[in-house]
Image 1 (cartoon, one colour):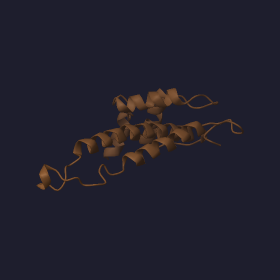
Image 2: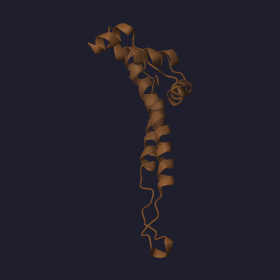
Image 3: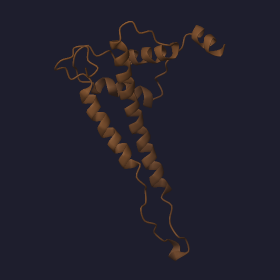
Image 4: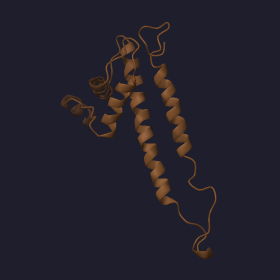
Length: 143
């Protein structure tokens, strides 16, 4: 329950779930149009001024939020894999799982997940996180 091997009263990933809903709300908020009214400029010669810089800024903010959300989703997916005994992953999925576990340990008992989430987010944001396929897996993929 809650992606926790302990079950019962264990919180597991519930605190992270609350953060995810907050991030999704922030993304939806930023997805609103930049301008709801068109304001004439240049003494009416032009019908409206573009708000491109503001739109680009909002988009950049949304990318940061999406990266954080992806980090949380990767953590939850890796935990779900860990809880499934006898599960065999495809090479690509296994590489992603291994890369996640190199940064974030499996949840064995309740602990604050913020530090783990921040480590994975920082790796995603800094382009430092690279799941690696073994050479044999690459050959199979090309065949």
